[in-house]
Each structure stands twice: as C-alpha cells, then as structure tokens.
Image 1 (cartoon, helix red, strand yellow):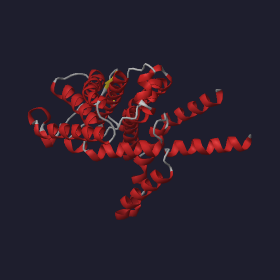
Image 2 (tube, helix red, strand yellow):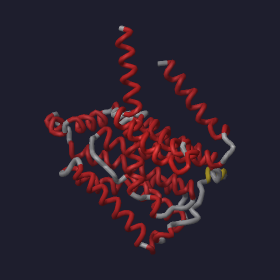
Image 3 (cartoon, helix red, strand yellow):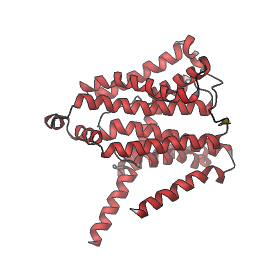
Image 4 (cartoon, one colour):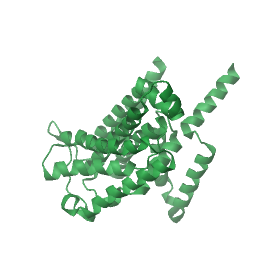
Length: 314
C-alpha cells in the first residue's frame, strides 16, 4: 500500500513539472487537450463501461458545456468559477432527458437515439444565430482569473485542468467501489437480474447518464476558456467516435483505461506526423490492430499478463 502511494506521489510530482520540461507552447496546449479528453472519456466510461449503455452523444454534452460557459461569461459577465459548475449542471439536465429513453431501448437502438440527439444539438448551434452566433461561433471568451492571477498561458491553465482531472478520477474511483458503482455494474451484467435483486434500474440508468453528461459539460467549459473560441464544427459526430475509441483502447470499465487511451490517442497522431500523407492511414491501422487483439484494452491486456505471471509464480 505504501509503495502504491509512493508511485502515485512520484507520478503526480512529474505531472506538476511537465509544463516546465517543454518550451514550445504547442505541447503545453496539447497537454491541456489530453486532460480535457481524459475527463470526457471518464464520463463516457460511466455510461458505457460501468452501466453498459451505449452513448454516442459525447460531442453534444461537450458542446453544451462549452456554449453555456461561453455565453454566461461573454453575454452576462458571469465569473468563470460560476460558469464552470453551471455548464456541468446544464449538461447534466440534458443527460437526464437523454437517459429516459435508455429505460425502453438498448444496444444499437439507444446508440441511434444518442446520435440523433447529437445532431439536433449541432443543428441548434448552427441555426440559432441570435444565441450561438451560428457557424461563426463565439469569440473573445475570457480566460479564468484566480486571486488576481490570470490563467492566460497554457502552462498556467494546465494546473487548473490537472486539478479537475485529479478530482474526476478520485470521484470515479470512489464511485466504482460504492453502492452506486456496484449497482451500475450489476445493471451492466444483467438488467433483469439487477431488478430481481431489488436494484432500481430506472434510477441508476438515468443517474449514469446524468453523471456522465456533467463531466462532459465540465470538459466543454474548460475547452472553451482554454481556446477562447468555439464553433459548431468542433462538436461533431467524429468527436464522439474519437472519445469512444479512446475508451476501448485504454480499457473499458476501468479507472485508468480512460487515462491511457486519452494520452495514447491524443499523442499518436502527433508522433506520426513525420510520415506526412500516410500518417492517418497508419494511425487508423494501429487503432484497428489494438482493438482486434486487445479487446480488453491496454489496461485489460496488462492485467491479463500480470495474472499469468502471478499464476506461474504460484
């Protein structure tokens, strides 16, 4: 136990020093993007990994959080620290509405509903110009300030994102071993059996969508204030697919899987850019191979190897 906490402490110390190890602003923005992706993948993991409900509405909740935060701060002059939780709460409200259909449909039917929801949100962003400014998006989104200290540089914003990621991971880890986490996993394994055990499947399915949407809304708010600009073309269906692939590659239904998948699939395209026009083909091939031969994701594969080693030692 002491060794585990020592490893965590060393890892966290390295993360604190990470922005200081790179001089290029590009990499510092990339580190922020990794953190935001981690939050979104964790949110999807709660619905898909723990509850077994298929959702492809990640980009929609991400966009709702971004637009709510941007509109509150640019139009109403609300502080970022108020807009941040409000963006999560508004996204969570939509999560409740989307969670209700999950009570009657599942599998690919539920996936189609979430895809439709995402398209509706995107079309509203494009066509409701008086509110969203249409395809032009929202500009001049203010950067956060804390005790007179402006987070106007990527290395400064990084510590805010890192704090939120740590909070989300700790909350998710506690959720996994709690009564709620056990109920969600029971529903994932067999909804009928869970009902026979007295679990209120209606409540927990909607709750899973609500928590998931909340974290995605928080991620959207962080993204809006990091980039200071958002537009509808940032919150498209391909973004939801990308987050889904990150979850599968890292390890669905695990605490560390979203972290591994987010880091790998955010950095991999950057590592392959030296191949110029071929890098997307190689990137896609690599993802396909990992999904075929590592169905439990990287974390699942490592757990399998660890179990095999322990069995041999016995």
